[in-house]
Length: 385
Image 1: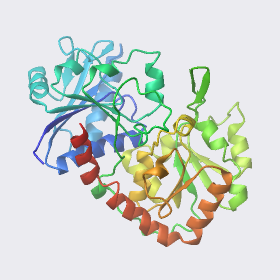
Image 2 (image 1 turned 90 degrees about the vertical axis):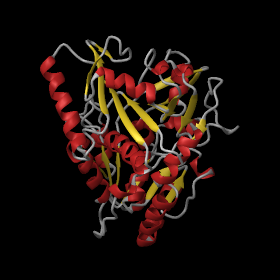
Image 3 (image 1 turned 180 degrees about the vertical axis):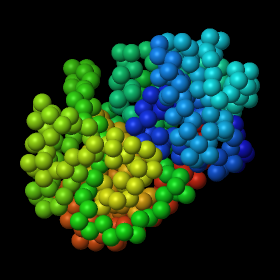
Image 4 (image 1 turned 30 degrees about the vertical axis):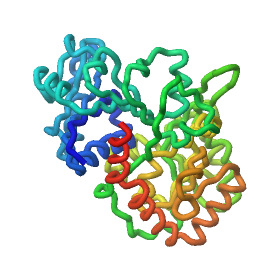
């Protein structure tokens, strides 16, 4: 494979320092591509505010965090216009590289991977080959029916929805050819924690939200609250501890905190437990396994979505018990990764993992090495681009 110059485009890291999972995801993109011998640039689209001091603090944090991975001088660029994101570099300012260097990088790039549709025109059109990388299959496409997102202004379309190209996936295609890719891990970042995790809970890291979309008279839920409430009785049925790292207000007016605790779930603040990428990794390693309940829209539209967070659990040697979105059609399940579609199946999965724990620990790591290895997955993404 020939070495390529690849620009990655994002818009959320600098404004979301507490989102350690998304930080780990994009850091692994950079490290994984560099390990394959490619020249990688990471462009962050930054909406500046009227508070210069707050902006400067965010900028310092952004580069300091990347410095932990020796990435601060590796082609990282912040682009912004005053009061706006830096989608037009003719009016934008930059940190990390001078603007003439930025323009040279764009002109010489072989690929632009626009992560989650972060950048818009005219920026996208400056690249000889731009690729939309979709990490929210179904959600993105349904939203784009009502909101102009510039999706059709790319050359290629990649999606983590493994069934988006299948006839039994119900998500709208927007008359585009969506090419599925697998989520991945950069394995040198992940060691299998040898600590005996007996008694540790099945865990997850998530947002507690209520969002939904309407499409053709159909309600499509984006609510992680709804996703986990479907399985609120798991602790009672398995006699085993479960923990959610999700922000619920201490005096939660909805009563969800009290209800979850009554049902046997413990709740931890993710902004404390996973406040940095390293904390995020430690939280995963110190879990017994993952319990993953995706946005209902992924299951309802049969998109085949599979979580990049779940892949991190696998890499740490932590089994994953995940509600099936259709991924069992193309991913190996039953060893290290167990799929379920209802409470009975989830209970069976918990019991299987606990009865044969070390077997599933080894199988989880094997899946990370053989199926979700960035060496294989990123090469495939480049080939699909």
